[in-house]
Image (cartoon, rainbow, N blue to C red; front, side):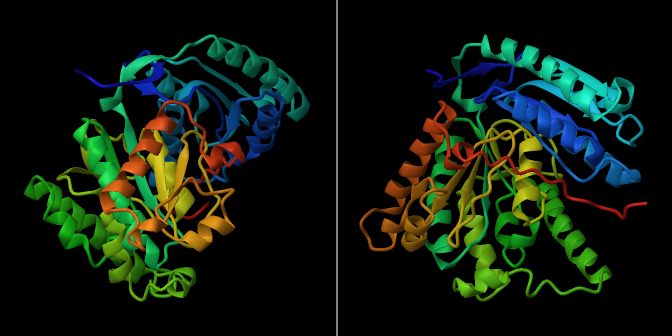
Length: 387
C-alpha cells in the first residue's frame, strides 16, 4: 500500500509540504518594495537578491531560471512578481513560466504603479488577496514517494564525516526505499572522491557527466589563476580537524547514502522523481541550497559540526550535528543531535532513524528551528560579469 503524508495537492500533480505566498523581485531595484510587502502580510516570504539588471547571456538566463524555479517549487502556493519596469529579466515571461504549474501568479511593475509608496500599497492588497485564498486550502493525504529531499553540509568538522553525514546517508536510503528522491550537490566538495560516486552511476554517460562537471570547475579555477586551498577546506574546517579536500569530500559524499546515482543535473535544474541525483552546484551554503530549492526540493537536510543559523526561503532546512558541544551552544539553531553515535550510545542505524523521523515530522508540518527564527536566505550563483 502506498505510504502517504499530509500535504497540499498542486494543479500539476506535484505535492507541497508548505503553502507559501512567494514575493519575487525581478531585480535588485524592487527588493525594498517586496520586503515591505512581506512585512505587511504575515505568512508571505520574499526573496531579495542583487541581480536582474546589467546581465547578459548565460548569466541573465541563470537569474531567470532561479527565480522561475523558486516560484515553481511545490512548497509555493501562489506568487506575486514585482519588477521595476526596465530590467533585463522579463516579468511577463517569468509569470508565464511559473503559471505552467497551475498556481496563481500576479505581476506588476513599480514604474507603472507610480513609485515605491504606491507599489507597496497596491502590492500589499494583492498579496492579502492571494494569501486569503491560500488559507482556504486544506491538507490532504499525498504520496510519500513524491517527496524530494536535498542533502547539504556546511561548517563541517571532524564529527561531520564520522557521525552526522553517514547518519543522514541512512535516512537518505530510507527515503529512496520509499520511492522518493534525494539530491546531493556541492561539486567543490566531491573533489578527490568523485571516482567513488562515478562508480555508482547507473550508466557510463552519467559517470562521464559527473567527471565533466568536476573538470569544468577545476579548469575555471585555473583560468582565474586561483588556488582552492584556503577556501576549501575553509579555515573553520581546518580548525575543526579537517586537513585536506579529499578528507572533507569522503565525509561529504556519505550523506547521500548508498543508492545508485540515476542522473547528474545542472544548477537549479528540476530534480527528477524517484532516486538519487547529483546537482552541479557550489559549496557556498546559500547559493547551493537556493539552487536545490529552485530544482524542486521540499526539504533540505543540512549537517554541520561548526554550526550555522541559515535557512532558506521556501523550503524547511533541518540542521543536523554530531558535535555535542556545538549543539548545546547553538541549540536555538539545531534540530537533530546524533553525537551519541561517537560514544557508542546509539548505532549508525539508530541515528539515521532519528533523522528519518525528523524528515517525516517536518514533511507533516513540524517547523524547523530556521523556520521558527525566520531564516529565509536566498542567493543566486553568478556566471559572468556585470555590464
